[in-house]
Length: 124
Image 1 (cartoon, rainbow, N blue to C red):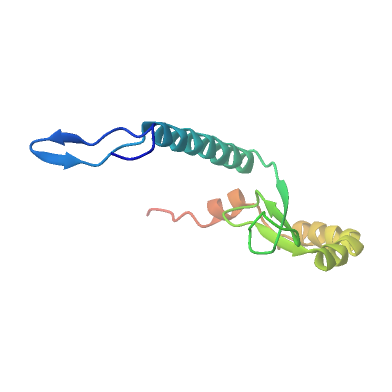
Image 2: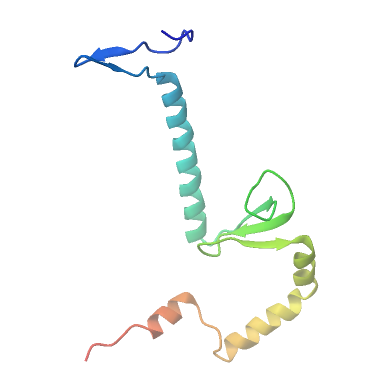
């Protein structure tokens, strides 16, 4: 038997030894997975609702150190900008908005819904 007082002793089942099970560890892992699942469901709901989320990461999506701005909520993958890139975008923000507005008025940009409606095949 293990020196761990919390460990469940091995049990004989059908003549064979079953390994010891740490029920407390399994329950702790289950709770951690439930919390992670709830977090992921919230992120998915935010994406559908149009809400963006912002995180500072090391540029690889790892949130343990600083380095880049990660913007989630645009689609399947986040957009990552380093500080210098964000500063360049910020400096030209008005120009960017004017460009997008002009392209939209000229019919060069569409929404996802408009694009999907335009590509629906018609049945003859």
